[in-house]
Image (cartoon, rainbow over all chains, first blue to last red; front, top):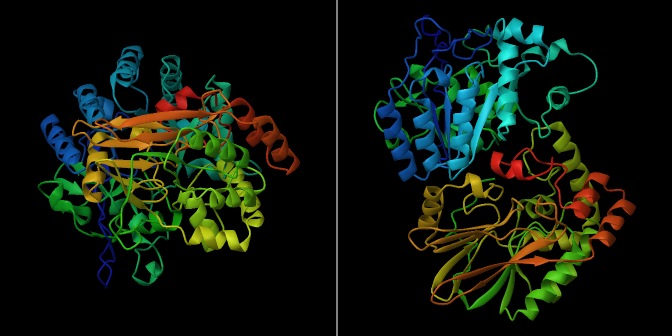
Length: 296
Length: 276
């Protein structure tokens, strides 16, 4: 897998997002190493030769220590598939000692032992453990057409296992199959009904737009200009108060982790505390939709 | 939406000095609960009553709470709902993404906007966003959501000690008081600082009981923090909400103590304690 093409630089310098303080630390724990190969994956993760390497445990522990000193509010683990990392459970435990922590997973590796371990972590931790399980459609065939054969059954089983242990996973979907559902009703409504039918009494959902990067073909989105941002409060963008530790350094946002244009430091977190260039078409998607990769 | 720093122009320079105060949050147009809270606080001999904002939303007859706040000399700061009403925004600034939550938030905001007089909106617009005072030896900072963002949620299970230390060091405060989430908590930090979410008096706190909560703080060799339950005629309030055409889900919350809407921002631990 080669690095996704970097968008051609616009003629004018990219507008900047201010940095207002570290609220969110993202850990790209497995880089782009994943056991699935989803059709729309934003960083083209997959099982073979990840273009973005996994992180070693010490790099992550160092980033968590630094983030704690800087007053971080929440920590997220993403990839790739975080549960492929041999140290995922001790690293989650370490993070939960510092701040509420979320892990973004496809759910396919959460068997009974892993679910027991997560329930134990959640019970011992001073802060909330959030588990986001990706599912792109309540319908098995539509989901597996995007995420691969068998992905639906394993993810739904993971949600069931977590629920049985008193955990409330957040089912996370992109809008990739929204067009396949014409007529009344919302994605939230469809997923809520589906989860209730699975016995989930308190369904929790996160719906994300589709980003035209990674494996998803380019859309008409073009990079932002200063003119686009007149009157817009740039401090609400997630690159204004979040940073990502990934192979190669510290990046401005989880969508662009690993891309040279989004790298703000090769060293410490504190060195990345400067304005981030809004250079990528994905920045325009963020601006247009008001989305955040955070839980809320 | 990001606040000015807490040492900015909107913080009075002259610090009031107190020994015993009552602090309430989130009135949400619940006039009977406000009346009961003020009577209870008076009976406990507090020197002053403070309100951390969000006077409207959720309950009926929004204008009813303002005479009570003014007549009783409640020292208030602005919440995100107050800011939205005062500035004529078209929504409450609650930031929901679930269309169901937005549906209920929009009903509540439209009703409250239409039922709040121009004079009261102007009063809300003139409120400071923070207050500082001395409570015995403690330097107190009051805010609505957090010292840095008016609508930031500081839930007990999602607010790390490192963040609290960072916020209070920046604010030069030993005691930080906030509301906004609707559920009270108190954290004594290892460095003797305290962070307290004072709860809300506008609706119960998702525990299956219909009472609401406010907080009494007393200075001494050690700080004493009392969370005080307030029982009021919630059935009459629920009937008024129904008469006003507010959603039955809102009245259900008032009667049962369980939150029925706008649940998406709750962290896992707080959500797991609720019914929905």
